[in-house]
Amino acid sequence: MFLIRVLPALAATVALAAIHAEETQQLPVVFTDDFEKGATQWEPTDAKAWKLVKSEKNSYYRLAGRSNYKPPFRSPTSISLVKDVVVGDFIMDVQVQSTGKDVPHRDLCFFFGHQGPDQFYYVHIAKRADDHANQIFIVNKAPRVKISQESTKGTPWDDGWHHVRIVRKVSDGSIAVYFDDMTRPIMRAKDKTFTWGRVGVGSFDDTGNFDDFKLRGIRIKK
Image (cartoon, rainbow, N blue to C red; front, side):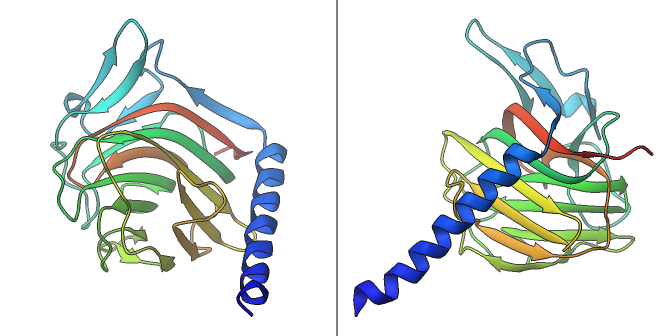
């Protein structure tokens, strides 16, 4: 009886992984950055809050402190967007490290569909979930609103590096967020408000590091 219950769930997971792998291969790479040549391809809300960290082995992009930036509506303050790249469908992959205090709202954020400071989506990945944390949000000329239909109880931030992936399909409005395990999303949403926009990284009011950014997608001319 146990085996009968487990097999359909396992089959669904395998099928999801196969579909996801196929989608990843089909979308062309439109932007990559390993920060070995600097961070000139990024546009932050406050340049003083961001820095490039270089060592003999690696370079990465650091959000070192809260940005001196006041958004038009309640939403994250620290945002750095990729310059001159606008996409519809996309798959974003990035290596990330949370460096904030180990509190329930310890977070990093990921932005997409960005059409201006008052119109965009963002994913808030936090240690503990509630209506304002560890969810997918929309900012549409009003304070941020949760749109996630599914989410975990929290994301296990520690001091190590992790792999975050975000998948967006405009045709059905789907948004899926992955954390380390690329076969099972930690969040899902469906929304068709913004069908194109810029992408980026940051935090609501925390700190962190970003590296090996890769964006596959359908580039839109605006």
